[in-house]
Image (cartoon, rainbow, N blue to C red; front, side, top):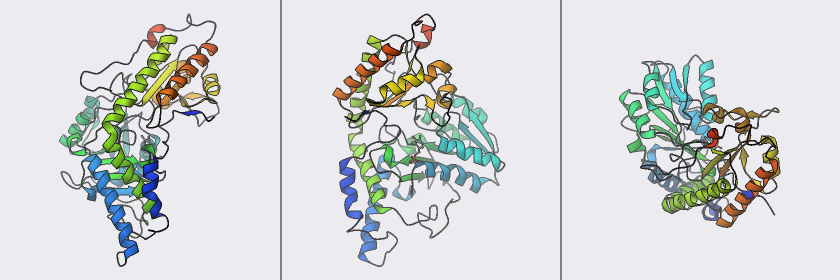
Length: 406
Ligand SMILES: *Cc1c(COP(=O)(O)O)cnc(C)c1O
């Protein structure tokens, strides 16, 4: 049997309804969406425009504000570098945070090489950026604030409303990488004051290699420079023949996510709470990373005190597909930069599991996953446990928030 898939922050399986919607656009309806002189082109164009509407409806945007890209990495690059390039005569400063996705952080690093200054704001122990810090970081040189909606490791949801308001007051564009939040949490670009927003289809049960960037057209009109030059597609912001089947899939994925968001959030919250209860009822010294309630309902990020991290994941991997709290890029295990930024001690960070529940996760799977995690953790716990560990570090249960119910 294949391992139970609990890594939905990395990617999601495609929904069969998305697949069905895409199918005709591979062979029968193969037209180029720019070929407006014949039926083939027009039926492709119509499908692309329908997708644009579906994405816009999900975000409360205008369809003309949606630019199709190859995914959130490209959307982040286009937003960060595109705004910086266009606005560089006005100022050369960008504000972001240490826990952003690599696509934003590495784009910012690139800007630094071209003479920009970047402020990487710290986060608190829950992973939140303090909006007052955003306020203080903005100078008369600042052209962009780029902060994510929800974190890809610990699930923390930022105070986007306050950050959007500050950016607007200060006349600075606000880019939000909402790849993990789109389709899972209500996101309204108008009420939240978001000027640019990145999203990706494969995180919401759509195909890989397609995404979008929302670019505000008025109040204020966002100006940015393209990265790709060519035929002038997508309001000249992203040249290149559109990937019609993928775009159709993205639109369908957004439509389904919107229709099912409320019930799915509740269902995932329930499953997640059960999984956590199961684990914490049988094991001491399990720390929940991230915010106690301002978080994605499908996310559980757990550190296991008194366990060697490398052993934990290898013991689980035949049965569970989960991600670790270690950076997989190096030979020597290093804790992830997100866990470092929220101050998780190194040993604990290395013994961390990122569990991502999703649309097709069942009660039975979650129960089996809980059993497996408890079994493996008990077996690996060092003899010196619990003497070696400060138990207070682990006393962070999930709580229901005053306003949010995540
Ligand atoms: C997955 C992810 C990305 C990258 O998206 P791709 O479509 O895979 O390029 C960017 N930001 C966040 C927060 C993500 O989770």
